[in-house]
Length: 565
Image: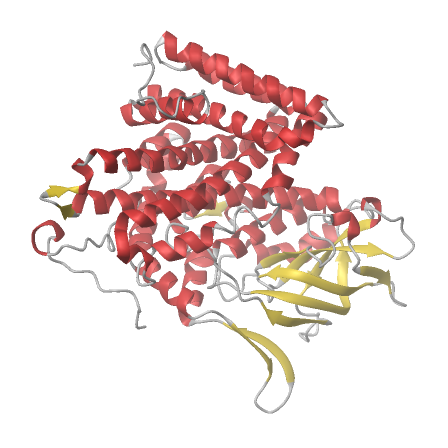
């Protein structure tokens, strides 16, 4: 297959060519911090087993997968409504580059099924969530769009297992768990309507039983990614149920009926999106489509919330991956590019700019590991772990996704004029980064969910206990530990006050969420630094506290406060 990606110049860029090109590097081997964090968070035997897979995916992400992503981005999917003989048979035509990426993600690496199988990548037993997110973190550095269907398939499977009847799970799970690309099924979720975006209580899609007792759905769904997925979770309002959230139920919608014919719904059109161009998103019209009730009638949003929260965590992982790719590109350019007789990286302003890029990228990476660890503990039934997961998930979704928009844009500037050209990865990263703050809840909605977790789950107490323990164990100077402790206490106090003020506190939800995120990430990075021996990680923790939490004089010279080092 031909590629539109610019060929890599094999000559040494610092000697003979002034335009550095990082394409072809292994994104795992060149990321020492990532390797040290995996060694900290994963059992040694599992990490040893995973090394060749991480290395292979790192090589693909820096080479072939990056080429495929570039090609698929330039050739978006198209919707065909009929065959050439005039038969109504809808299909979405995807570029071969996208299909090859599907084979890698769903098939070879099993990213969608990994959390639900007893054997993946030759490892006997269930993989912890950190493995899936670590592999996704590498994959998304090359291709963002496909990671949405991967996440939705994983989340749909989790929700079906958790709430579906034995009949439904035995019937449909095998294809969702398969890694055979010719047999496996992909998933989606169809929630959004024109009048019901974040306001799920305003769902208008109808559900009723036909004469044979089967559920049927009718209505329009306004934004449906992966619209030709084999299965979708759909929210609908059953006839004769109360208005509001209590009337909304969750249904499993198959693309094909038992006889192989198409179910009764149509893709009206595909969306022309700013980013994630490789992956199809469309509008769906349900026309008496057959569906299966999942879980208890009238509890659709509660059940769908589990799927949404899983997708929100995936959004945070993807934002972290995008930031890592952007920062790594900027660092490479700064090392290899020469101007005015110097390397860019030796210039003080460039050093300062790179530091500003690294801090949010490393915050997000740390919070990925912390949240994935909380997910594993919650699924194992550990006391207090669900409350911790319940607040960490919207925290990372809120802050990391917003940070990714700025980091990718500022990193593009480091490349200069080339960074604005579509031949390079920078424009794609910038376009894709804007998705995270919108899908599965906008920033306002997710910040309010942080406050809701405090009100309903005592999540602030769980957060205090967990990060307080990490701070107690952190091997840092007393002055820095005291500064972290005082800032964290202030952030928790503000969040608690916002949650307690039901009448007007919500206006500070974003401020409170940002404060918690910055303090928690700084504490966790300080803890990680002591265990990995990373001076760079400690410096990032100090920078986050100094520049993103504590008050600053904009006219003063920046410096880490005395006694922190």
